[in-house]
Length: 191
Image: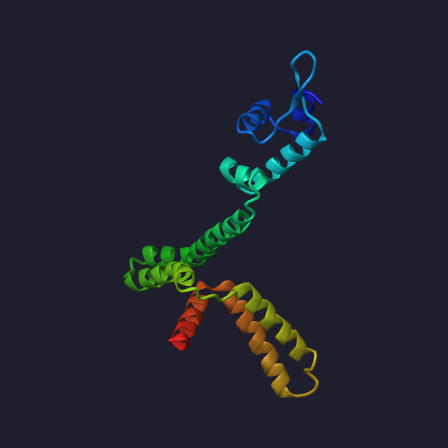
């Protein structure tokens, strides 16, 4: 395939394809007239680049992954996205509180401290090597809630535990404040 064909087939611009060649990511062969020919190998590489770019990888990261086989970059990218997701979720959870505080012209000190503590939660996790995988914790709690809910006919305790686990999982999933509280508890017991 020539550049026009592969550009249309993969929905990549010719400029992008030329840039990837310039960066050494692909090395198409040339025909007798000096035109570049893109074989299956180049097509596969271009598809890999396209998908990595969609996932937010920079060209230097892509080069390290494809040419130098530095696969730890995937873990770094995942951590980067988890941190962004944490910040977005925290912002979503506090935006109404800030709005209400501003609209009612209330003192913002308390909520400001709480937001600062919540944002520092992620930093503390990384610095102190303290890990609480809240997603897994929620899954475990939902599973326990389901197990006890299936035994509701047994007694009141099963029903109580089922509701307790379900509500706990929901609160952990939905609230940065609850996650901050849990983190403080874990830190207390680590000391």
